[in-house]
Image 1 (cartoon, helix red, strand yellow):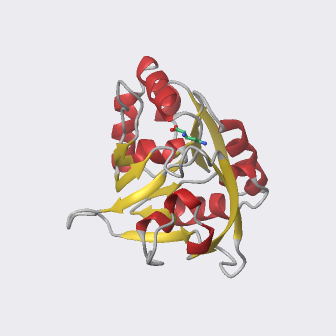
Image 2 (tube, rainbow, N blue to C red; image 1 turned 90 degrees about the horizontal axis):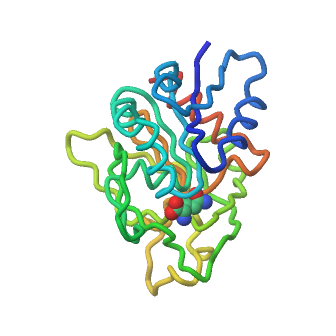
Length: 223
Ligand code: GLN
């Protein structure tokens, strides 16, 4: 069996746990709520939930988890959702005063709260690539979500696969620009790089477990 950890310092970790348990169906997934380096050392993969990225980073530092998390990401699959996506990015704009510690690991530049302050949260059906039943849209919840600004893998980095985009005409008004291309990085809301997965929305807040399934099947079991 495989042990999938969920960083459980703050945020939506219980919802991720419920999704993994729904998916499990005797397939041998052990869910570990990670609060200490010891917990982390038992895990084969990790989910970093949404919540508040500055708080999660601060609590990780206090728990002595910051360096173990960075090391973990160098060898094992990690999936960051929303605040977790910020932590997996190489660089962030719009961080709180005092800065934002990042774990890094994905060649992404991201904007914290990038949909604009007037858009607290919204829903949108996503266009999928590589996820099960990809022709059926995924109804995604975005909550003070980050926005991907740039994808910039260098030649040594694993290539990036775009797993979901938000349709251009559903972008929040704050992000709309004239003549924006459908390939604009700001439309990317889920991407995979090597064994890591990043989603700017909250798949754990729906009963549609296709992203959890994708992470387990494509990032964990086949890497
Ligand atoms: N805006 C939050 C942050 O900066 C992320 C929001 C979320 O995870 N729902 O951490």
